[in-house]
Image 1 (spheres, helix red, strand yellow):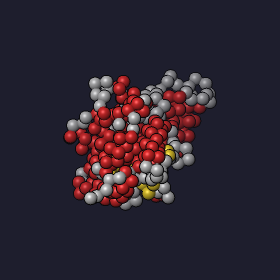
Image 2: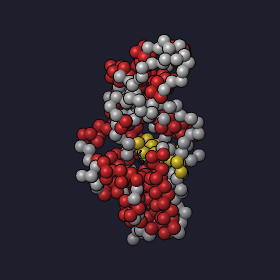
Image 3: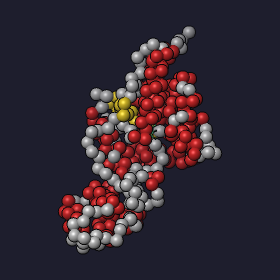
Image 4: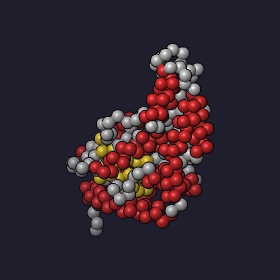
Length: 331
Ligand code: TRP
């Protein structure tokens, strides 16, 4: 059994792509490993949210993960700011992180480009905070995608540096973690190969979208002029729509439209109508669950408390031991 840590950004909502991607992995992992999943609200302060937005975003994403199947009994599901031990470890890592290496981090350079008016020290030290998130539980596995590989590499650097400095092997070397099996491909609706919040307006279908919104988005999905030859291969934009159909529709629906395409009789309007209704059928129980959880403050409180307690138990031990290693001793 591995110790697994992953942070969840409290910006934006869960979409169908997340549901079939990261979330599925989390749900499998919670059955097999000791998992710590947290909502990264400290990290989100780099963009200066209002108190109202900050709290609302944390609540929304917590409700969505619960509705989609994260089980607070199985894993520690907590809010990062409920675990201030993280900040102490962050301070320790900051003392041994070099400004130069932080400045060379790709995500920092990107942020400078995107928000030149707000290049704060929190952005520069994002990697040390992320290292603290992971190593506060001495995790060995981190389920993240390629875009986080450099942050993970830096986490290993900071942990190893600490180990070398104090001649210990206290921190493990956490590795990226993904279940081997092929994830279902979830493309976007605007011709983009990937569903994502930042991929443009109308590209993503969110779990919390109302049926009318889903219909509108799907009906506007990008298509082409239609097949001209029998049994021709589908171009990417059309393949994308079929991939979405495969995620939420029955096999008879898929073969029906496949056949229509192969015989040049397909009407994209019909396909989209069917796709929209199947998406709605798929998301409706999730949307209802999300709203039900959001209305249940007692339940949210109970979940957050349970997560906080589990996370605190592991973090308090790490901080105690790290303080000892560093040489902080009680008088
Ligand atoms: N940086 C991650 C992201 O942008 C979020 C994150 C913060 C994280 N701390 C983490 C992920 C620790 C894994 C482990 O998605």
